[in-house]
Image 1 (cartoon, rainbow, N blue to C red):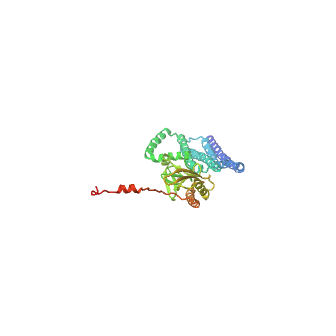
Image 2: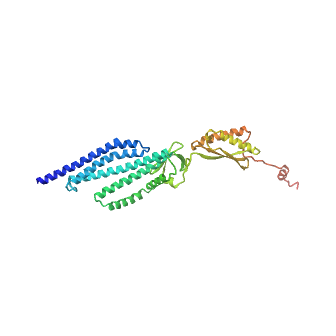
Image 3: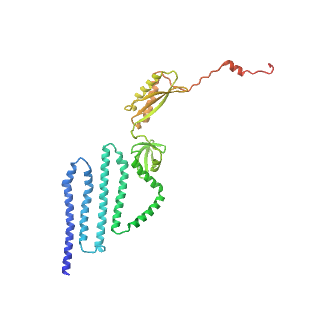
Length: 362
C-alpha cells in the first residue's frame, strides 16, 4: 500500500505541476502580447491585426489554463466517467468548447467590422449598416450550432436523432410561421441584392420615405410626414420599389409650358433657359434644355428638361423654377396660353333657318 500511495501522490504532484505550468505559460503569453506583439501591430497600416489581437488575447489565455486542467485530469490514473473527476472533466470540456465558440465568433466579427471600416473609407458606409448585421446573425447561429454539435458528439448523443427531431420541429414551426420565415428570407435577399441602402429615399406601398432600418422581418421607412412605415420584407421583394437615391442622388425632371400662338419661339426658349439658370436649387447640375414639342389646340407647347443635384431639393427646385418661369415670361412680354374657342356665325343662313312660314301665307 505504501508504494501504491507513493505512486499515487507522485501522479498528483505531476498533474498539479502540469496545471501550474500551463498557468505560467498563459501568463507569459499575456506578457509577450503586451510587451512585443501589441507594439508591432500599432506600427502596421491596417487595423485588422489590432482588432484581432484585442479579441484573441483573453480567450487564448483562458484556453491555455483549461488545457492545463484537462491534461492534468487525464494524467491521473482514475476513471473519469464517474465521480468528481468525471464531472470536472466534462465541465472543463464544455467550458473549453464555449471559449472556442466565442473566440471563433469574435474573430469573424472583428474581420467583418474591419471590412465595414474599409468599405466606409472607400465611400460605402451602407455595407456596415445594412448587410453586416444580418451576416453577423447568420455567423452567430452557425458557430453556436457547431459548438453544440461538438458537445453532443463528445457525450455520445445520437446526433441523427436530434437532427430528425429538429427536422420535425422545423416543419411544424415553418407551417405555423410561414409569413415570418418568408419575411426573414426576403430580409437576406435584400441584404445580398441591396436594392436600397440606409438613408435612401424610396417609394414603397404607395408611400415615399427614407429607409431607417432593415431587419430580419421588416424594413422601417420614415415617411415625408414624419411617420414610421413598417413594411414586411416580403412585400419589398415581391413588389416594385422606386429608389430615388440610387445610382446617384441627382434627378432629371421635365415640365410642359404652353404659350399663346404668335409668340416668338426662340424668345420663349431663351426665357425658359434663363429661368432654369436663375434657380439656386439647380446650381451645380447639368444645364437645362428646352424643346418646342407641339402645336396644341390652344398653345405652342414647350418641354423643359432640368436636372436636380439632390433629390431632397425636388420641391424647392420646382417652386423656384415655376416662380422664375412666370417672371421671365412676363419680362419678355410672352403670355401664357389658355383654352380658347372662336365661333363663326353666318347671319343670312342663320336667319333663313330660323324663319317660320305661317299657314295663311301659304
